[in-house]
Length: 160
Image (cartoon, rainbow, N blue to C red; front, side, top):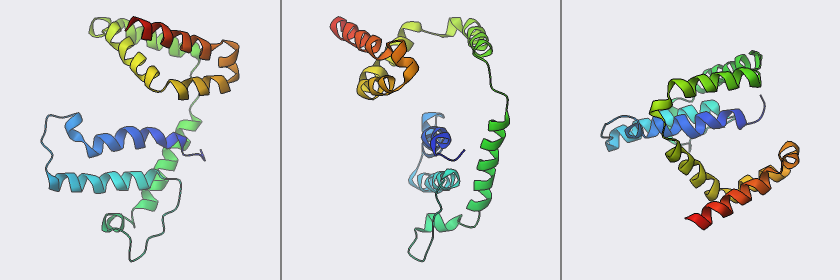
C-alpha cells in the first residue's frame, strides 16, 4: 500500500502504548525510562514512515542511534502490509458472525450504556468531521447517514 493510512494504527495506538506503558501496566515511568522509550517510539515511527529521512551531522542523536537499522525495519513493515493485502477478504457475513459470537461470549463483561455513552462522546466531539465524511461518501448519502447522525446528536443534546 502506498498511502500512509495503513500505518495510522501503529502510529496512533502502538506508539502511544510504547511511550506510555503506565496506561497499560501498573508501573512508574521515570525520566530515564521515558527517554529510552521515546527513542524506541521514534524508531518505530521512522520504520513505519513512507517518506525517506535524510540524516546529517545536525540530526538528533535519537534518530542517529538506529539509523542503520531503519531500512531493515521498513522492509519488515512493508512485507507485513503486503502479506495482509494478500489475505482473502473477509465477507460481511463472516465478520457479522464473528462479532455476534464475540458479543455472546463477552455479554456479561460489557456495559452497553457505558459503551454507547463513549461512542456518543466521540461522535459529538468530532461531529463536523464525521458528518462531512458521511456527506462525501456515496453509500452513506444514499442511506442519509449524515442526517441521521445530526438527528442523534440533537436528540442526545436535548436530553443531557
